[in-house]
Amino acid sequence: MHNLSTAKNIKAASLLIITALIAYVSSVLAWNNPNTNPPNDNVDPPINVSGDPQKKSGDLNIGGGLDYWITKDGDSFALKNDAGADKFIVGQDGNIIVNGQIKITGGTPGLNKLLVSDAAGLASWKTAADAGITGSLPAGMLGQTLRHDGFSWIANSVIFNNGTDVGIGTNAPAAKLDINGQIMIRGGLPGAGKVLTSNAVGLASWETPASGTASGSCPAGAVVTGIDVSGKIICTPLSSLCTPTTCSNLGYNCGSWPDGCGNTLDCGTCPTGQTCASGTCATSCTPKTCAQQGFTCGSQNDTCGGSLNCGTCPTGQTCVSGTCKDEDCKGNNLGGKRIFVTSAGYTGHQVRTNADADAICQDHASTAGLTGTYKALVYLDEDLPETVLPLGYAFYNGQYTGSYCNWREVAGSRALMWSLPLKNPILYDEYGNIAVLQSVWTNFISGGSGTYTVLDICGWASQAFGLAWPCLPGATGSNVTSNYKVYPCVTAYYGDPTKTDVNWSGIFYHTTAGLCTDVNCAWNEMSSMTETCQNFQRALYCVQQ
Image (cartoon, rainbow, N blue to C red; front, side, top):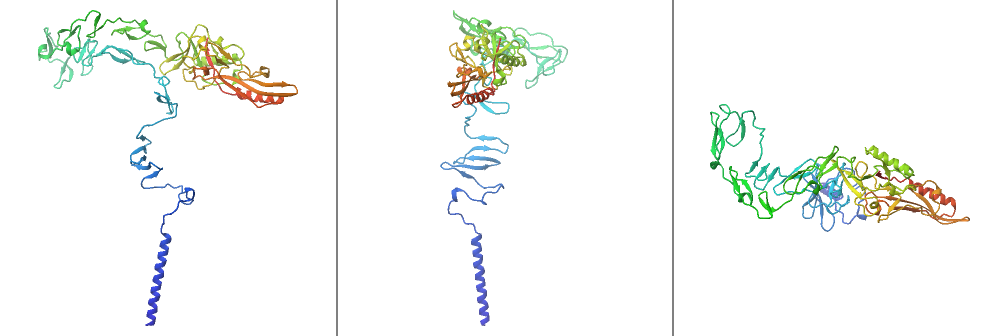
């Protein structure tokens, strides 16, 4: 009996130990949420440092104040606001949906600009003119329609629409469709001797008469409505088929017009000083000639509802809004001289003399197919800039739009090249494309009032230093035999082809070294700074002679 009691006690104790061990292990293995923030708001490895993808079910809240949630919307990634509305979605197909306005601050934004992409799809903000959008809709008369001749919109009255009826070849339609001229219907199997016959729903086709060729004619006041089995036409009085229109229905208050049923309407006459134009009394109109409107080509409006033939353009030009324009930028430029920016840049070492610079301009012109002689508009201590600008001419810069060359006047004369601002910048190269470089060697600066100033040295010790144009070395200070105290310097002028103010020709480049107390120091500093300036890549302005 004693042994049995002892065994029971041992069994109970063992069970108690096992229960306590299980409870301890459970407490060790159980997850307890942390009750304090990690140091520096971060968690040390190995928590959350794996390179494996991580997954969270549900939204992820980011930020303070108004919350934003990163979430999964179907198969798409989405940002939601605190109200749960999708504001930004990126789909698996790469498409982006924005629920709200988009503000693009890059690409030179500005009022009323257009977002235009380049060949690689990079967008930037452009004015309508820089985007190649020019011109406006032409002036028109009541009821006229527009047509496009491949280059611009032209108003004419071949198709006339008064808002109720449409006329072809007439500006006084008396029915829904009124055609003044012959009609050719190519559909419905046309053929010699066939007649136009409708089916039960009004669809017409060309049919051979049941017996020979249709014969006969209808008396006045009747029209052909069919053909009988013998091939004779069937006539029906207009009075039973047609309801004539009225002057009121047409909106006319003058003139004689068809009533649509074979008769004529008398809509009255106009008072003294007025004429009847398209059925409406209006102040008398005097047609304008091509010359009065500045037109030199194409079919144009005479401003009174009529049309003008203003001529054709020579080979290599096309008619754009009544003016002959070059199909590329190789043709004439409105009787003036062409000025362009080279499509490539050159170091100061390559344009040391006017002969070097002129040869570069001539090479660019010849390569682009431009005829004539071209010289560089630059000052290199030889020819003054004004001698490169021929007297008695305006100067033009051409932009190739993809269909023709849009010539832009830069200045109306040699003197006006120095009077600011220029009418347009010298922005386009010999091909009519926007210049690649926006920095041009000039070494002169426009004075803004018909004068200019050429580059001078920044101190003594200039060209004796060596051929340094277009970067001039010099020095300021005192040259005492026993004690050199000089500040070596280098100067140059260069232009910005996007500008019409003084910066089109004269942005001042100036650099000065520290104080030198011996001639070797001054020589070395000037050499180094001059070499740096000479190595800049800048384009040239080139002028047709």
